[in-house]
Image 1 (cartoon, rainbow, N blue to C red):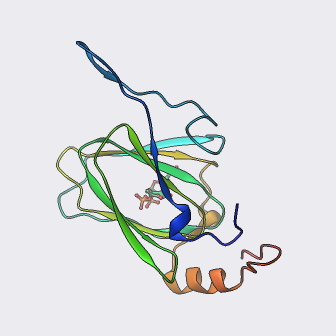
Image 2 (cartoon, rainbow, N blue to C red):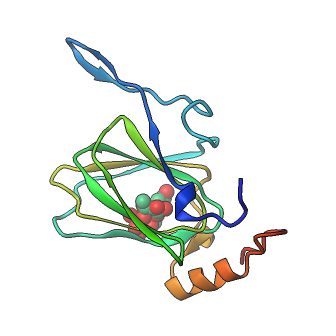
Length: 149
Ligand code: T46
């Protein structure tokens, strides 16, 4: 695993879909599908049209986001490059590594965003300010130790 993550380290994870005449079932097994121990689950729903969520980065937190219902756009930014991922399938997760600025918008009506997180909620794990996020990335030595503020 690189110490200084980029948007290229964020990737889609395909989950299975067990389909029969009763509908579909998708399961998530720790470690098999998600490359971290899941310590927290939360979900975002009832998002008013035109709203934007997130708009921050995390120092050490890994997350997987899944559109359990509906769709939304996840904009990823590592300070140099940007990428937008449309999530619209409940059997597809987006792994977001630490040190990635993310903004989520374009929620469809009825969208539900499930998040699996590698750690418990901790406000001090956030970069809430974009300039602070960029400075912190500069302070991470890609060749050696991690100097996350
Ligand atoms: C992320 C995106 C996708 C908690 O008490 N516990 C929690 O686990 C979380 C995530 C939030 N909260 C409280 C903190 C705030 O008072 O819920 C309130 C809303 O949280 P926030 O403004 O951080 O929500 P989003 O949608 O902007 O961001 C959240 C996550 O915080 C973030 O990690 O990647 O969802």
